[in-house]
Image (cartoon, rainbow, N blue to C red; front, side, top):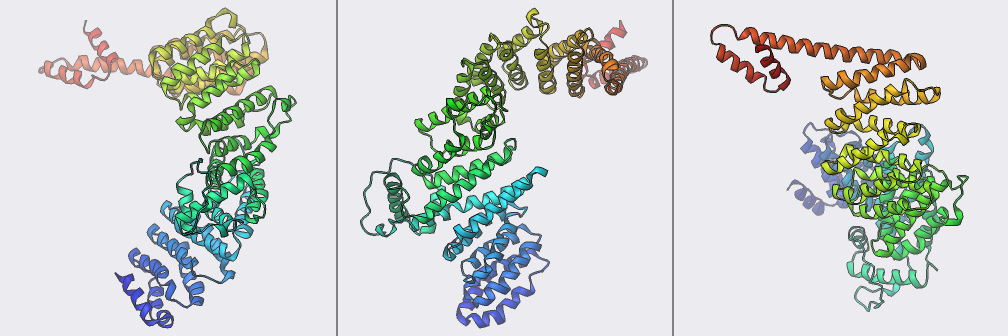
Length: 637
């Protein structure tokens, strides 16, 4: 009501009196102790913007809002500031204020409050983009300056990438995709042919479904859904039949923006799941907004030219460096998933199969393939597709590719539902676990371990346990050093999270056997390898609750065997092991004493009057400990 009154007053008296009489009222309350007053100030700056002298709008009012954005502690006030800044951007016609507007955009995007950042994307960036479009600087200044900041950030990333800043710049760039597409449509050669109320060409290009949200933004910019529909028909037709001839704004996207983005993607760290995810989302939005024909004819060819994936290009000397970079997962998850018809899914499957084959045969790191699986595996829609890719690897003629397939199953197990694990994952792993090549069999162990850590179906767990038991107990594996290393590594990783019974009855007894066998290992480097891996496993498992029986029969004896190795091989480890053993021995002793004292105190408390009541009272306190109850009755015999 107050704002409505202020606006009515402003309309009536004109800009001079608004500046002289109303604006000082706002200025005086900019630091008021009540946030509601400061909120009113922030909102009035936007509401009064159309009725102020333009010099005041782009100086004093802009400065007031800038101060509140930087200093105000209340999220709701800063949110209102951002919305008012968006309105101010709609009225500023002083091009010298562009730099200030850009810095305000970055400052507000870095705000800790989600509601403030949401307002930036919904209100400020669209308004700022509209102004830069009027200035003709969207493609020449705003987008290039964001790209430059991203590039600078990645260059500094050797010392640790600031992922929050990357998120800020990339989300800003993503919010500029609809305005960019609107500019491309408005500057197209055919724009003059599209009329809002005239004859719209009936061209058969409606076969490609388009997404709702990015194009809703574009429709808002263009001012009409009908106009947008007409422009989209002409846009798709021109792309399919005439290309980009005479279309400067689209040529800039194709010849400058895309190559620069693809080059940036090749420089990000493929092991940073955050970076991969952010860039994938950006490319997905870009491709969905600019359409399927654009994606197929302009985006995919540029990626494919760089990736150069074909059977002839398998470089066994490791020359396919680009396949080890983030370009692979971002192309797979940001471009190849945009459209979901059969041909698109086949292309994605074929691409992942080619990457798996090429990396395997080149003996190259698998990080790019893993990143693709992690990003795609987060969405259950792609689980069947990823299993299809892995089955291709399972039946491949090369043992190197089969090894890779075995290792990739580990990444899928945690996200895939148990039915798929039972029907598709375990049968594939069982097939690989009887492979003629020992290296392939060994590669299945981490995936089997992850199943033991995550699955609850008893029959499934039993099958996996039997397979792991055959690796450990079959005489043919007795001298397989690599296999034992993988088993111990896997036990150390999954043991703490596995079912306690599996840990007590399977993991710890087998670690004890392996530690005992290592004492008589005559090849020193193998002995130190196993001992070091056992040390890692025992360190991880020492945090678990271990029953007294298992502690006495397996955990402590295993640690003592390991200490015997470390005494000779690594004295610094031996000291830590001695401390661990001492702690475990104290726990066992204290438990024995506690049991004895608990039983004696119960026995003595039974003497005297009200014995029955006291006995029942003590029994009630002990219902949580079966072992102590057993001791009570043993002592009363």
